[in-house]
Image (cartoon, rainbow, N blue to C red; front, side, top):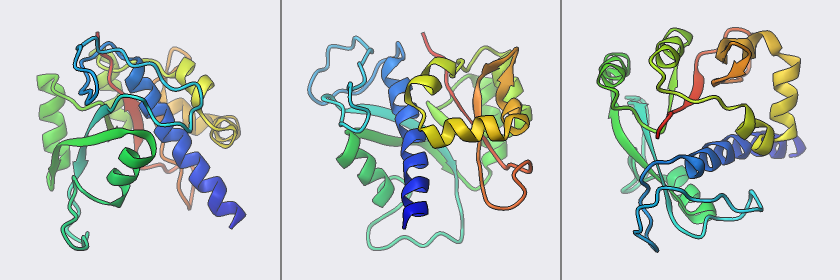
Length: 193
């Protein structure tokens, strides 16, 4: 149970990093309580507290033919998305879900029509960086990442370098079971404003 809590804390730290980053972007957001359009939402001082105003975070994803949803659930309405909304007042919205993720992602990058959060491989991360479409994460990471996630960055520094350019962090590798340096995805964040 203790390890499960650590894993959950790491996952939530990543979510908080995403939500806090999104809240700091100069990008129009959908606010249910205030439609002023300022685009800037301050993160709560307590990272576990929900945002006062709803923050919309967009994503793009890969369709998995083996996924079985229960009841009326689907890719845009499921227990995870509802938990983000209920716990943090973050409204996750899919720009698209595709069974041809690679092609659709390449087109989205070429059109500069990308979501706030999505996964890429190291080659696409380089493309996004070179096109100035993503932002450095160092400040957000230091402020919001859990101690566990920060320790992973130290313990597996070579793996984390895949998400760095000129010493700055632009993407976080997906840590998983198995050989740690054979990561599948790198998570980065869209640069706006």
